[in-house]
Length: 459
Image (cartoon, rainbow, N blue to C red; front, side, top):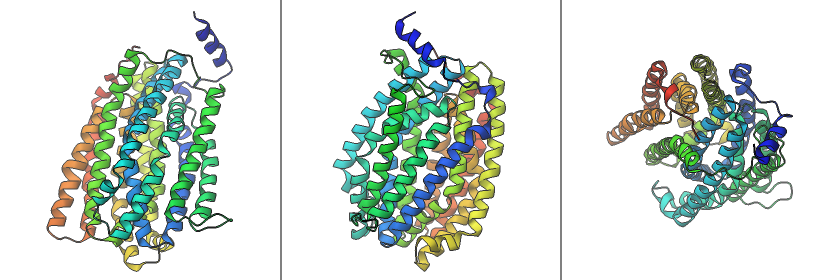
């Protein structure tokens, strides 16, 4: 046995390693939910602060954010691969492998983030122009995008380490770091957007800086704790890069990457259709998404639990445990998202007025929220069962299902309705058909049990 392996084993003696039977859906879900609730408060404050600058600023920030998410798609794919492989390693009690996967994922993510950042900076004008925004909104969106994107490479460390910790069953450490990050983000948003607390008034540039600086702090804290050996996933030693391990990561990640790109470009196409109706409709769409953030947060929390349990149970050679955990995750997610969606819909109008004092924007936002609330049970299946498949390493099935729901159902129907000059609420209603189709396909894939046999770990 090598000295590095001996040191790693000694290091792990003082760290409690989770086993899937000791974990619960709610125990894994509530810390991400709480952390994301705080993060949603940052989003609300961001929209509120920017909303004081007018509908153009709200539309610009929403447009810029969507393009940032598009170019984060490759990084999120690596996070999916990291989750699946680390969860398998932890389930089989191989913490050295978990360390190697984490190190390799950081290398890959850093390279991808630098490349996508450069592409975005060089083509920001062209990318924003596809939405056909008015000149003022166009200029603001380009500015927001250029400032936001430069922080992405620095955030990759925290993204990978956070994904690795959650896959290992430690969902509390990312939550605690997120609390610190979100408090800083709120302080900077209030200060930099409208010039409070003695800070300069920077408008949407201040919003981009606030988010970027706070994320970098979170990444720095996670990187320090990891390098100091304070986390359940160890630092490991040199040798994380092997052809076999890279192939394993790529095999799991690339379908997730394609899915993320398909999803983001599909969402951009849908957003583009909405944008053709006008600035008020775009602002309403952005506000509506923020109103429903609570429901999405619940779904994201349960998705962490579903992926972690799926991967760890299969790593522990307990496929029946993986199947049952997926059923529990799906049931809890559907209940939580359905109830929260209806609650938010009932209070959509006063919440919308909180964001912006524009009667037309508020009217469209309320319509959007009610339509999206109807979609929540089906959307919950995408969060839970989709994450179960990804945690098991089955990333191809969610890709195919996303293509069907988004590119073969939602976007074509939305284009047809726009061509027929239907009101924008008809465009919003295509979400129901999208999520219903995906929900049915996910249930069929789950019941087939074939997703349990997709990933073979041998590195």
